[in-house]
Length: 187
Image (cartoon, rainbow, N blue to C red):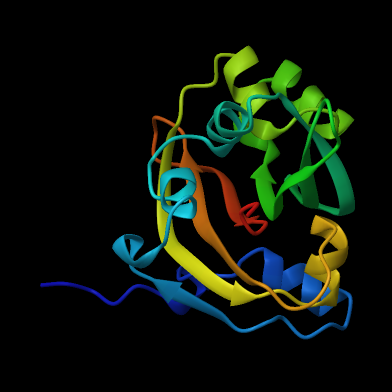
């Protein structure tokens, strides 16, 4: 016999990005879930997998990336941040996202690096040897709004693709809940 999942455990596909928009009094753009096979290239190669985004983006762009924190919030042991990942050499934005990190699930060194806000979580996981799995819950399509355009240095409305992902520790506890949105591919 199956039991319904409590509503509080079902996270929307835009979580935690939806919380940042709500706190800022902004309306979240319409975000729709799309099947992985419907995501066009190069977004499909960058999003439809169970790997971490940081090394995937670095390989694709042939450059390391670092973090720019746009907004942050801490609620007890949950650390939320809205970020842009930019390339080291050109400072070009390669991802906009929002993340909720469960700090208690990290050892002190990793926790300290997370709170220093210099490195993307993918770098910290690798450097600190944090065992985890990446499990995308949804692939996303949306139209950019003024806020996302500002973060990704875009003009006009763009169709963007992303994913809603969860990083799990070996005990099946969520290390991080993430929305990752990519800028348009260069023509």
